[in-house]
Length: 556
Image (cartoon, rainbow, N blue to C red):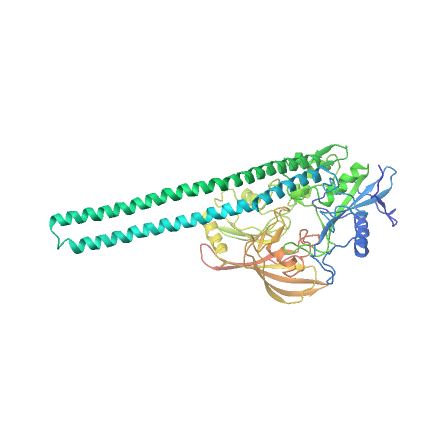
């Protein structure tokens, strides 16, 4: 098959060694060849005139600004030549196909495709339903029915009010005449009043029966239309479901063995929206389809960051977890020798926990960077496991609060349940004072400030966090610059709340400091470590009630 999208390197790459293992797509440092391929694509994006898409980089450009994820895949063809493929995630300029970019894995929008035919059939049902819902006879019947319901409710309510009023009048009349009439006349009066009461009730019963029959007749007329509309909607729903399942079945991906697996099979017929439309599956599918050997891969963001996310222009990012991981790890990368998965590696191996304070009921430790606070899904080694081993007689839950794995610094540990409860209550009531030190990868315009950006987890790309004013939890941080050196800014963070990745997102987000913490592999650029350290804590001792202060300076 002709490789229309395979581009040979235009620069001399003879001095660059090939990687022995393919890129682990969910955590990687781009290979030099990937960087060259990405630079080539970025140069094209900066100068191209083949399509018009507002990436948010030109303030004068009209239309909604939408940044995009792009990907490059370095490959080797059957001649042994090295080149690369380009891809974009989703649509670009509202199109699936563009020159130089590999096509989508399955294009449902091609002319005369089964999707187009079925879509037109569904549209026909939509038009028929819409015509019925706008039918003059239906609308008039419905209006007549609704007006009759209102009239029935009004008249019946009026009759009920009349009955109550007449009862009051009858009672007043009885009270007035009972003392002046003879016993026989009183009996006659009571019969007369009782008959009047019965007549009022009879009128209410007759009115109720009349309106029941009237409304029933009108509702039957309305039901003739609504049943037809409901039946059409059920047929449309069934047709739509059939089309969806067919799409899932037809949307199939190759692996290196030319084996195919459909979207439906991978996600058990319930894929997330946009699954298979990301750059990585497109690149690998085209490579396997055209006998190209994958060497390495990288994905980067181009354009303005979405308001909720942290995306830096030209920054490399891993593939998304919810949509890409099942496709890539569950099928497409089968048999490829890949770089080691860092998520199953124990980064705490060989590291020790420093105890900086200890007494009979508690201790404070200095947690190293890349060290779990509590056991993870695949790694048990953690602060909890180490402390439990060192203090087997401790009865408390031990861990009073947590630090992110990549964050170093002070953690308080309880040796018994009473101490744990007392310390945790101080965290809950926000009476504990904490200070973090961080080295930011850039310069700031201000010297201090306050950040208030609510956070929630990115359901499509855990553990990343999003800024979300609708569903996010309140997150506030005070900060202050303490040093500026070599283009970096050292700051103190004073977190008021304690949300996951709060300081990392507040530092990197455009509505925060817009300057990521140095070494932040999720929201910035990977380095030797995340330069974030919990250096100071002040709390009330759970037994002595003494105000305790602990300081452990950062090693950066």
